[in-house]
Length: 90
Image (tube, rainbow, N blue to C red; front, side, top):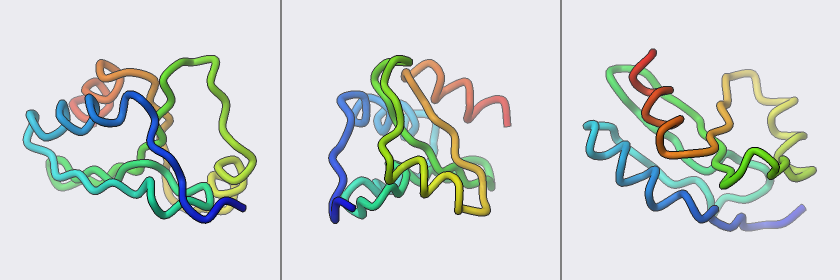
């Protein structure tokens, strides 16, 4: 298990877009071990988001394990537009 994760190429754009909407954003990427990339707070709700730059990108083994054992909701996001849609539809 890798100790620290790396950021996906869309992370900066997603963080900027979420903040423009008024969301609070915490990067969790440095935690590694399959932990999702972002914790986003928006309109009283929390979102754990795993960022992938393309729909062809698959979850790593650590990410699959984390998603299986985590009791909360994790959304995989493939674009800035999908991030915005996810936040606004909730």
